[in-house]
Length: 333
Image (cartoon, rainbow, N blue to C red):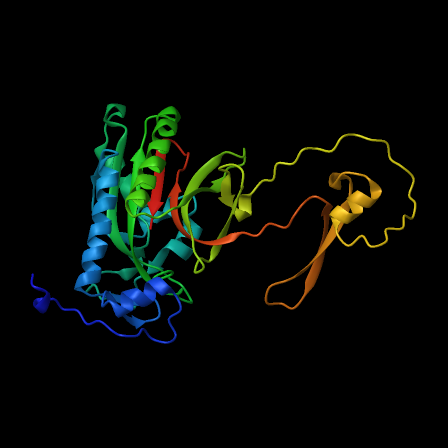
């Protein structure tokens, strides 16, 4: 197509309220136009870019022998009634259709607008897969998802509607799942390499035994709403909520009687350790922290050599796996 025929309108300046540099370029370049906070219209250049990214996701999943399916967003409510976490799913992942979509004489109490497809895919798998010899199988789809958020995020982050690629793998046993899962992580890492984005593979969740059950591919960004903890000397990266610190236990020693010790001009732990001629691990310090948004404060006492972590904000893409039976899910949005 000739440039003169392309529907595009560039702008010299972006709106003053736009703070993210990348979002400003998208607006100025005519890639998209916002209807409201979190609602965007992708114009021909933006739609073309999004199709190219989607094509890379398709290519990556097909490299894992993934087969594309198309599952309905409108589903029977009874499909979800057998889920183990039915109450949570009905309250969060499923929205009622009553009063929103006219379906003629259909009783809307029996239908839901689902924002995930685990149950529908399992229902199809139960009726289609007849033998373990048909496993493993990888099924996936790319579809638009409505995000029920009270407050939309900045730019394209936290959009009320987003394009999601859901990939599901079914396995005959746990050993086959454990063999396949690292291949999924590696393939999605290659997708980001093609986009020239330096992402971190972060542990996202653990089971009761401490085994990591899901991972997130995270991209450090000032617009991120979540945090991860990363070690500066190794590849350990994990969600802040499940981070575990590995500290060498102090050597055993006899308890000494309490006594007052003058510490003139010792303003830091290093000064104190040097003055007392002891390692910093044998000292203690108290941190006074202010709570966010509440105006209160609290104190925390720990080993003198410990430092308060400073986690980076991130933008997150999620890869997860579950262990009931042979069912495994990867959710990339």
